Length: 591
Image (cartoon, rainbow, N blue to C red; front, side):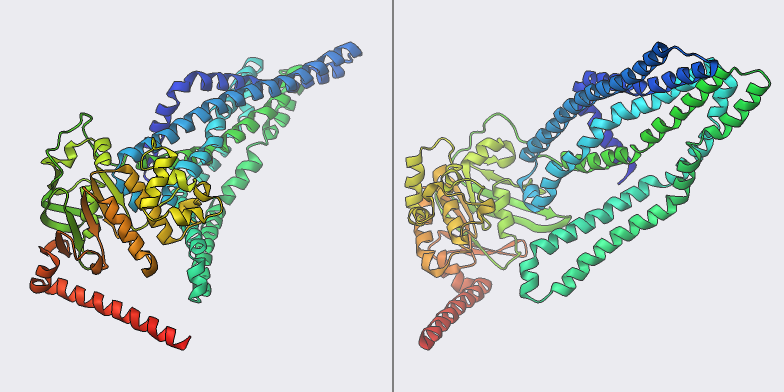
């Protein structure tokens, strides 16, 4: 990850945290008080040792200083608890706001971006990545700040006691700094690479788990496991090689840096012997010097957390910076429902897939888009629904460019039924009701009846109250499609787009689906994409799309006579249907 992206991530986080600055400042103050509380026992012990050397025999004196030490520990626990509570409260508010922004962003980016981005990636950004910054964000600011300030205060106090001993207590600091610099050499590059190999390992693991059924069915367990194993090994090897690079610096730093008594003890003895250093000051310096390095080491341990926050916020920032669909807020006034595409061009991943497409779809007509797979049929349908902005040309409805129609208004005008129907982990009733959240239960059931799914819904364990499962996993493909059609019927939009909506339909239920579609599109403008040409022979017009261009258009009979491509597609379709029938008859003969 580049430095600019990481800095952008920190800037965004700073903006999110701005509204909770007071809580974070208070958290830092209490964290400092908590760390100061840990210093109190050191001071108490130094007083006790000094008085023991001086021959103090008062039990009350020692008891009082033991009480002071205990109060220091109690203060540390109390202030640390308050600091943690304040920082976590502010952090939870920040990550909630971050999730809200991601969710809102998804409503403003092109629908095509959402569809073409793996759902796991978006979910990872919204859930796992946001969750992972919580511990670091809640602890880094208060604890790192306090762990840096307290040693500074101790050193200042040591300078007050004896400037020579203060300097001597810092003798290992340059060594620690050099070791730290060695550890941090090319840190950003190495950390970015580590994140990269970790992402690759996670992606390979997800692919292995999600594809386990196919892997086993085709006997690819060994090769797929080898791919996963290689990713795990690369991740481990890189982590190990990085650790080996910094091990010498870490060992020297952790071994030498905390050894402040290396200089304090012998030189302090020299000063004490020549009378330039008193015993009480010598003892106090030795005890307090031990408290300098530990907080600094604790602060350094947060280095990875800071880099982690920057990396994660940079990744999330790339989502939040996605280009949005800019649409007006004032409702447009289309004159009718005629749909026109004029010199339409569109690129995906910098590859142009539609080239100067022009076509007209009259209101209340049935238009079928057919052609070889990958020719651009679904892309045209999605551009009509404004899933993306076009690169060139225009899409208009009722004489108004879709770019000038507010998103909410356009959504109300179009019902889109895709090949891969998504159902929520809700009841069947609520999944249908999504077409019109205000619809009554009776209205939902009436639509289900019209869509031909009422009977199979009643056969489910809990009828309409049966939970469909994540993505509709408890239902078959044909059942999901019928529910999607019912949902579109309930929406009652004037324009209906069916993108391979009968793809999963078996012959037994095809007539039911076709009947449901006929009821769905009564008095509406219908655009249908189909590979089963027999289902669109009665269309008002059939547009043949090939390699991103309009190859031919007309009615079924006209295209059979004039379009070689359509004729060959029709012959292939009829041949495939005949083969299916022959296979069925052969199987029946063997029964």
